[in-house]
Image (cartoon, rainbow, N blue to C red; front, side, top):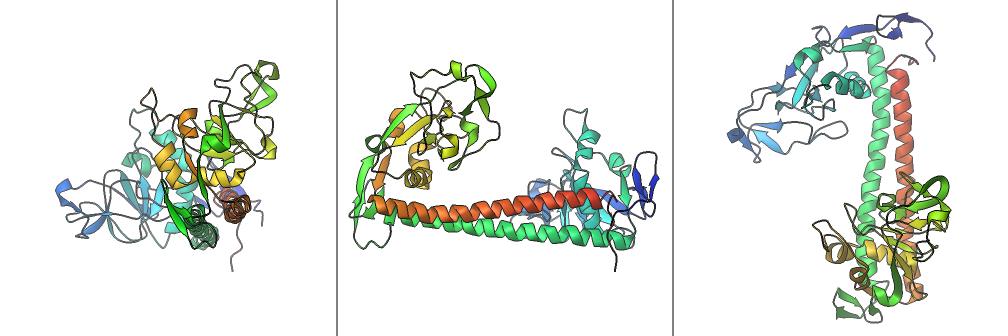
Length: 413
């Protein structure tokens, strides 16, 4: 239901039934700034209270402490809103129990008759960028108590706060369930990859190889024997808004090419001599930097795009591109052959010779395709779950914008 009756305050437009209050108002809440106890009182044996120094152990809503303090100085009670007051500032959580808080946190204790702790949590999360501006201007970003005291918040009547918090927490519960499903599916995929890429489907006899036991009927070959490995273009030449897409390391994400940060090249500036153009079924391998060893399969969408600094792997007819992509992403290849290798620099770096030497187990082509099909189905499930989470997060963002400003009002029973 759209609310049309607003009052204009000096700073904000709010519904007439709502108030504009400062956190320092004792009727609203009480603020406790954290203080770090002596390090000698810290322990991991459960002696004393759980200890939170800052936001490192924050979750989406609730923290997960791993350290305890036997002599706490400043304490947050159950349902206090915890806010990070040292860089990064403004992150919020809700305390599930009595905890000791260090100087990186403050505790906001709501007057339950006036303020819902859950509503305040969502409201502070919504205005998170405000804390960046409050802390601006200093070398080390921090929020002081007087700045928290003077923070103004829109405050609906208590029943409306409760209803708003219920709506937003329901969406959060949905996001949490999807998150759990994503983690469960990721564990399933990891287990299936370990099983299928080394044991295959239905085999009873195995043999020892340099990568461990594999089915007796499989062959072992070097990547360079079953695929052509070549370099991409390197540094981008002339850029043109509607030119040829150039795939760089930042566009390679665990098996797929993503569009974020994509650049485009002037067609006339791309030399044909190095053959940097991609074809459906090629596989990109990141050569250098933070993403060294990451891999992406080139789908039809990216046919004709140009590879940047990365390596291009073109499989022969004896190997299924999707199967090979999954194997190159497996932990055995990533840990032993791709990640952490260094050539001529302190930065992780791969060259074509190293990649060509990667040992690959070769099942019969129909079995490769079946393995790829099974893992692809799990990836499809993950993609659906991630899209569902994104959709719920968009819904939550819209609800926060509408309900926490009073632009839309909730119906009270």
